[in-house]
Length: 320
Ligand code: UDP
Ligand code: MG
Image (cartoon, rainbow, N blue to C red; front, side, top):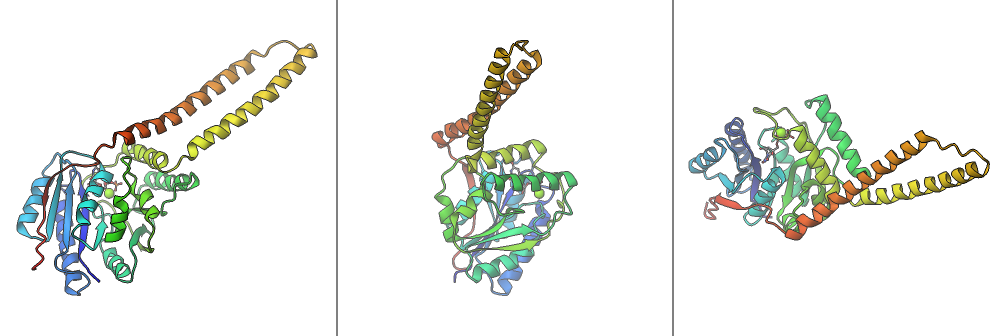
């Protein structure tokens, strides 16, 4: 079995963590090469997602210094998912297996050994699953877990407590390349690829340095993206809601008629006001959700490129 491993690491303003990540990853890769689990042509690919700091300069310097390091420079900031995809799609042409991980060392790099072992045992996709979330703030843990449960109940099947730390084989990546969607939510798409898969558990630690590049606003947008790009259940919910409201209105009609014929014609101002508000609210909510999907159709129909690579520094020396 061929054993070239590429590790793809998206980086956005990561100058504070990059030197440490590069150092620790180099040790890990060398150890794996030493025990013959991976070939010496394996690479660490840093994807610069339009950083505003010195990230790209640091990546180029690393590449100069050691051919173990490769770099992809995107034309501008496209967000974590697109940066990751650009790395995966580039690496699949050189590697037999590709691992994706974050730059901030929150993903325990010692899980790589177990991932590679599972790949060698025949798995195409190995999901890194965090065993507990004790290092996250209560707020992050609560919102993230609620998000997974909501996603699953809405019919978007994701692997519980798995983010984007995973290993994928070449053929799994070729499968991924067939998914052309612009609204990208990788952790929802990957399980749809199929092939034998397994999980490896690890403990997620705190960010090594710097600040999270996922503030609450981005996190909410990401959650919305996940739900609307994977499932159409919200639309069905609206239909159900509309039906229920319609049934209630029939009951109200009967009630109104009965009141009318029995002489109690004093109209209840409050109940009228409440119904106007309730129906108005429901309509607005429904239009909003439908609008979400129309927005998606609009974006998909444009079929815009998901990323544009400005430079690719790589030394795929087959002789080495
Ligand atoms: N990231 C990126 N582009 C962005 C935002 C983030 O490539 O626009 C990268 C970031 O450099 C890191 C990973 O995505 O490697 C995860 O981001 P972060 O650690 O800030 O998220 P958190 O762990 O707080 O959810
Ligand atoms: Mg992080």
